[in-house]
Structures are given as structure tokens and as C-alpha cells.
Amino acid sequence: MAAPSPLTISSATFAKLSPHPYLLANLQPPDSSTPSARTNGRQPAQTRPYNINTSSLSHAHGSAVVRTGDATVICGVRGETLLTTQIPNYRPPQDDSSGSDELRDYDLLVPNVELATGSAPNFLPGVPPTTLAQTLSTRLFSLMHTSKLLNAEDLRIYQDDLNIEGGSEEENESGEGEKEIKAYWVLYIDVLFISFDGNPFDVAWAAILAALRDTKLPHAYWDVDREMVLCSREETPPLKIRGLPVACTAAVFTAKERQKKGTGQFWILADPDRLEQSLCDETVTMVIDCTEGETRVLAISKNGGTVVGPGLMKELAPIAEARWKEFRAVLR
Image (tube, rainbow, N blue to C red; front, side, top):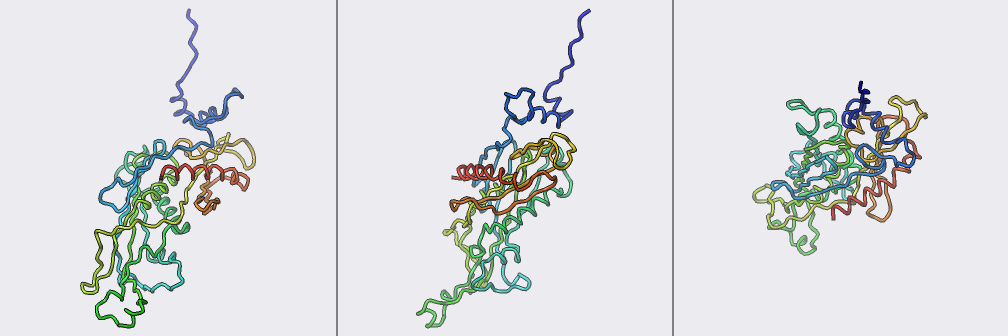
């Protein structure tokens, strides 16, 4: 009688039946000489490289397609004019204002996130916007304002009194005619996930950065005779971007699925994919900018868990700096 063969299953079946033990077996190999690795072959602190292609949409003022791993996002930016007469309770800005209040008060930046049907198994057709899409839109909206990425001055449309026929001779001689704001550019920033593979905030923010750097708005001015905004087809200056804030997200994977505070072993997984993010209860996102030669932390957000503290934040900073250098190199 032949001896019964031992029961074996493939790694793909093991991952589907017991995803948490499968990831733990890769991060904690039985042989101490084998380095700790994730199921996707990356090291715990290793991120997925960016692949960026700009000017992908022909009918947008700026666009970009960003791919990292199996995640693909397309972002389009389109500008529309908004007259100041259409803004309730509009007040002209003061001379010393930075313009950040204008961007937020008049909703000059309008991000929208859509998770396309088929981008992931849990995104079904014919359903209202998911909680994840609305949360991403809110976080992106908040970061665009807190990072001071844009200046309201670049979105203002003026009426220059010096160009009005019949202007006073004193103004023409002195050249100090007052400029009156007649309208604003409103930027509609649409982010579409074609393929979803975890860590959606980082890739969505990368797509927005690349699309805004690609945005070219036509020169707009207020025509006094026609009483409307006109745009020049010849002058399309690029949109000015302040700095280069880059987001880096890491997830905390614990050895036990329900681990008590301060006990057990854990791993910090940078740039988690969809499987890893579903197995982690704690994530932290750090937004940094190194354009001025020093690392500036613009924002830190943490969700769930009790593992990440000041010590682990310091460990995440070098990973975020490496992520920033990688993103800057891809944009050039």
C-alpha cells in the first residue's frame, strides 16, 4: 500500500485562506539568515517606484497619469472662471493678505475622487460614492490648503484701470492705477482610480502634484466694453507651485491579529498594498518638503492603533525623505 502523500497547498491558496499568517510567515522566516520580506517581494521599508506621464488628456489644462505597482491613477485639472459678482458676501482682499483665505472661502480648489468600477473587487457599479472616496477628497482638499501649494494671486483675474480708455492723465503718468479683481480661476481637480492597489492617498496626491505642475491657464482679463472675461490663446503661462510636498504612508502590521497595547512584535510596512492595508489596523502618513535644502514636515496624520509614537515617527522620516527624492527625480 502506497504511503499517503503529505497535504500541500500553493502559496496563492494559502494567502487567500489565511492572509494574516501568510504575511507573518514572510516577515518572520524560520531561518534567521533569511532577510524579512513581504509577500510582494519588497523589504518592509521599501516603496514602489513611481511612473509618471503628464499631458495625457487633450481637453484639460493639466493632466497626469501616475502608476506605482499595480495602482494607476489619472488626474485632470480644468479651470473655469468665477465672477466676483457671483460670490456671496465677496470682499476684496487686503494688500497684506496671503491669499490662503480666498482659496478656501471661495472654493477655488475643488478636488473630486472617483473609484472606477473594476479597479478593485469591492468597487461595484451603480452605487453612490463610497466612504473611502469622500474621505480621500476631504483629505486632499485639506492638504492643498495647509501645504499652501497655490497662491490666490495666480488665480485672480483683474481689470486694469490703466488699460481703460479715458483713464485719468495722472494715473497714466504715474503708472500706479489700481487693479480691481473681477473674477477668479476655479480649478476642478478630478482624480480617477483605474486600478486600486492600496495606499490610495499617496498615489492620488502624487497625481495631483504632477497634474498641477503640468497645468497651463490662458491669460485672462476683464473686457470693459463687453463686460466679460476674455482669454488669450497665445499666452498660456504655467501654474506656479510652491515647493514639492510629498506624502509617504506606512502601515503597522502586528504579529497577532488582536494585539494588546505595548505587547507583541510588529513591523512598519512602507507604501502598503491592498492586501497589507487590509491586515493592518494602524496607518500613519507624513507629508514633507525638502526643496529648500532641509526637511520640513508639513503634516502628520495617524489612523487607528496604539503602536506608532514619537520614536517610530523618527524612523519614518528617512523613508519619507527617500520617497521625496525619488518623486522629484521622476518629475524631472
